View 1 (cartoon, rainbow, N blue to C red):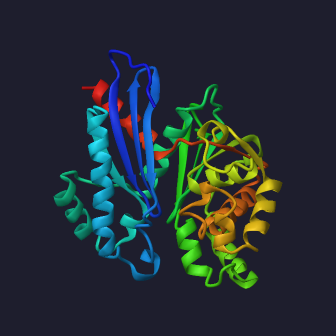
View 2 (cartoon, rainbow, N blue to C red):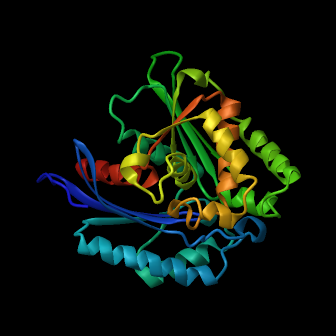
View 3 (cartoon, rainbow, N blue to C red):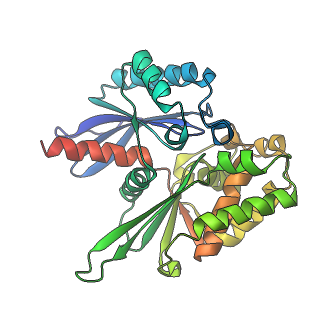
Length: 321
């Protein structure tokens, strides 16, 4: 995608190595905001069985290095001035993290930054709200990833009234829940109930300020794919997904439907499900329980997220030099 670029703007490429996906964003950023130049995704599932084995399988090393190099070359073709690569849940958890990072540094000549769950939540929140006009102080951001889920929202300080950003990162993600609990396809009701109890236990850590007054913004593959399903889109269309609203009853309806379907049946619903068909039921269960437990009636979908927050971070570093 082309875009107008101001003379002051900086072009940044951000690569997000997640549990299920590896995402690229190239964007122009300045004091006025951020404009997308190009974005891409691959779904190599780096975090396959990391929850059980505790390490990244060596076969994934080459696969991820190839994707990062492809993105690096594309970013250079698009004249990005800075390339950032970060890794999240699967790499955070992996016992062979150092070996993996060393391999990527040698293979790509890029040092990968491993974000903590708190950092991931922070940059995701700021990436999401950067794309919203008239953002309310009472906006919560939910990011359902492959290995972890982040919830971030502002609450007023007791004394001066300035908002403080509460950030949570939970060991619940679409890949992790699926691999740990769903041994059948579709999952048995007993497996779903065990997963539900685990999700609720994790989410019980959230200090609920009364979320019925908050706007919930949801990001990442589970949520954007559900937005495609709900509109009967045959493939992902960013213009129709961005800003789409799904109420809790629709999420509950979709979960009941997905939980009764095989992965191949889910895949047949839309091209948007490709690479996620086997983990969508788990991701939708996380979404359903989050909305139910915390009292959210509606979800607004955003295509933005972590990469956007990282681009903004780079601009702040650049402008303060």
